[in-house]
Length: 210
Image (cartoon, rainbow, N blue to C red; front, side):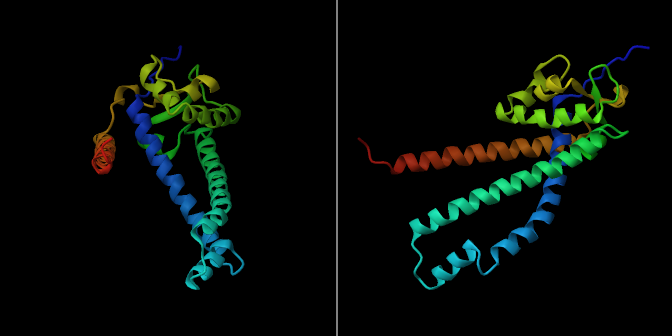
């Protein structure tokens, strides 16, 4: 019997990724916070020295910024690398498992398959994970392809030869709690947009007329 695909909808994928992102980020914070505090509280650390000089009243703002910038760049690079390692282990390990799905996808009744519906190997799943970087680099246009294309495949699915399907085609609807998450995110987005517009308007009223 040939495989009949049941492509997952964009919003189900969105909610599943949000759950996975929160899980990975929580673990990242648990792991990185003690390391960050240990680095900051070392007597020889840059931040410790800046705090001491600020307490003595001999800290120059421009010098502090020049000193802090390399430290902030290093912390950003280190945290990004740690996130990639943790997320890679999580996404690749879970999607290459017998369930073919992360915890978020399992909650939404989804699984990752090869293009023909078979279970994807570790190499294909790893390729999908790293190809997801292309979807982010296109300012999420690559992710949005999952809403526009007939097979509901994102850019990284096309690159890796995968798809995200409903485990039970007869039960493919988004659960009510999933729509609650989408609605809350929409409200947050509109609130941020409104605050931005208000801030721009307030700044504009303070500018002198030509």
